[in-house]
Image (cartoon, rainbow, N blue to C red; front, side):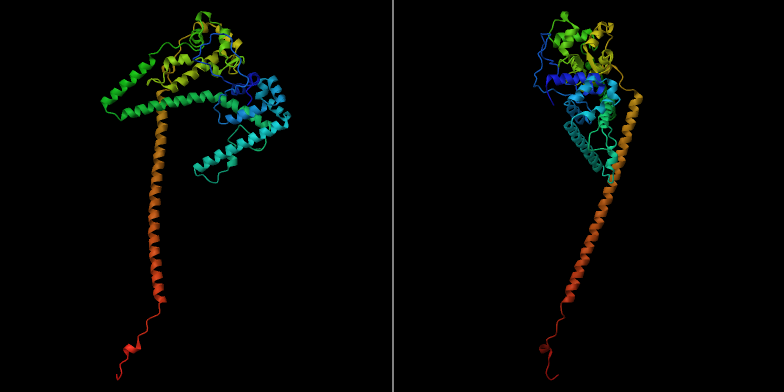
Length: 427
């Protein structure tokens, strides 16, 4: 991948205009220097040969997606078409038809990328089937489960492949945060389930001690400085003062935006936005404290980012431009925000949901127990069969030995009496 500043700026400009997906995937993130004071409002341009850091989308086909985009961006014709396209051209598949006009060597590279991706998927399917000991599976049919490429033509990259890739990634990325929330919810329910199961193993006195310790940990976790409302003036001024090292009385939204647009592309993306919450999160979460859960901290970070994006990102392209940012600082909510409730102050799940979750665990445990018992019985049967076969083998060996002994006895000629010893003259 090229690391030039012009390419980075092109990537952002292209995908801001196109669609949510491509704006998200090609974001090049240079982390905010949290511990370094910024005493100037201007920033030095990034080194031309500096390799940008890419943000993993979390998609199972992330590498394939990136490689396809990196190849396409090297074609001048396609790059020009993308720059002039709008979101609907991308989502409708219209832009995908431009693939027919790219140079031959670009298509050759894309063909190879697709063949590699198909081979990877087939290998994964085969490994999965082998692990479950399922034979006779139609791998070609299973390949149809993957909707980010045209499985009917596994050898060449066609406009349909680009269209499917855009549609699949758009859908998957839109659901990505939702899935992260669901994973966190399951994590919290499992944590509570295990706590309750442990309490059931204790006598009454120890149970009371554990409950008291649990309440004390919750209380300690809540004893932290006030959490400022994400995206409020108080929160941004704190970053301005403590992270940027600037006088709070000189706070200026436009200068703040330029400082935290860390790659100078004219946008604050989701990762640059999340970096603004680091100081805020540190108030409530310390990895050295037993009472602070770092997984909860990441959920808190995600919620803060979603909240600010919902309030500020007017065109919903998952990027904040300067105009959107300035407009947000003029709202009443920016100056007089409501209080911010942290994760531990909000219900993550209901008792009914926890009960259903525990029922599912019980069912899975019962199924695993049943399967373990079946395997144990199968093992016993196999052991008995083995012992029976061994006994038959010994009997067969004895029979063979007896037959060989008998055969040897039959092959020895009978002894002839010595006539000279038995002869008696005159008898």
